[in-house]
Image 1: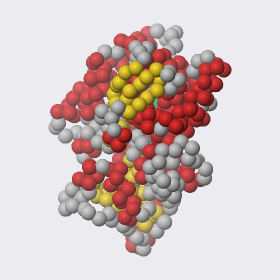
Image 2: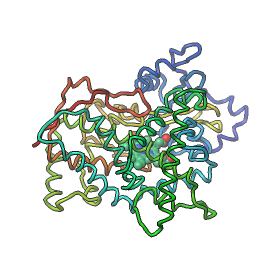
Image 3: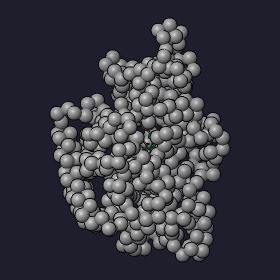
Length: 457
Ligand code: HEM
């Protein structure tokens, strides 16, 4: 992308093309309706019709979809001052809190993101791996020899428990009341599509969201105060990292900012992980031919080490390839967005300031140039064999804002299935074609009910 885009003169702009427009626009709503029916399919239509750049209209907000590895690389690598995430995700501000991440001045936002990344780094990961292994064991302890469950519901619960435990510590996790779950639920409901139009409208869901945010801060402030009064204790959780992080002038984060980072990390990691775990279970049930190779490497691991650890979980290539293929076909974050802050010259096409730009992981992962016969589930297909491929396979994004939790997410998914697969087989309960991608919310997940039958091996 041209580095001189900000300096485009009127005559330079006049010499550039505009992005081709997608057909089927309605007078006021533009493409909103078609987008709402199944936005992943709509975005694939945009790309098929217009190519690398395709402009559509979301009730007045012009959005340019950028497709293909080169355009996706440009999107992901361009810095915030030109393509702003903050401006595109203002609906998150009342959820994360004022002055937190998307509402913080750039330097403070950078520090907050760095502290968030620190909490997900190697030094905490060992403790997280032990926590997750324990939570999984507690979860399957009562399963018996066989049964039937909705695995999406189950994984939503399990990953809520692991997230609370790793973020806020054991005390909070085991005292976690229904109150916490309902507060979190109210925050989530505050992110319905209308929040992206105006998150401050007079609406009961937004009032409930604001009450929940305030109450959550009270709960987290209580833990912070307790910990500050007992500085000798160590916790090994994310809250400890958030509480000890400092800005350039040495000042600590406020309780509001710490609460915001807890919520932001929870939102980034919870449904992305539960949806992927549920899809992984479904794909194991649908593709039993790949289970043998995974089981063999797990048998070797248990024979060698006896138990799962952070270190040995890193060395499970068959299981990892299986999960990566799940993430190709069912990437939880389908649509990534930025707001254009400065006019951009993208290879002779003008993308004007004020428009939104977007990329679709779902469409990219179904590009037959890079993924032949794209709907076929094949864990062995290459995903990083060339530079182009690196920008075609992007479940965790890329560039400066690449997912900060990808190592955590993969470790958690491997930990879950390394515990489940040697003990149980999985079968579909309903007809195979009824297990579909549900795109009704911001994060892709399997459609409900997501019933599977398990039997002890
Ligand atoms: C399968 C699971 C996951 C997937 C597919 C996923 C995907 C992504 C993607 C695509 C982005 C980039 C968004 C953008 O560029 O606009 C992202 C960012 C992020 N993710 Fe994840 N994520 C997952 C799990 C997690 C987990 C478990 C955590 C934390 C525990 C996490 C924390 C974050 C954070 C903090 C960012 C923002 C990074 C930044 O702005 O610099 N993610 N994730």
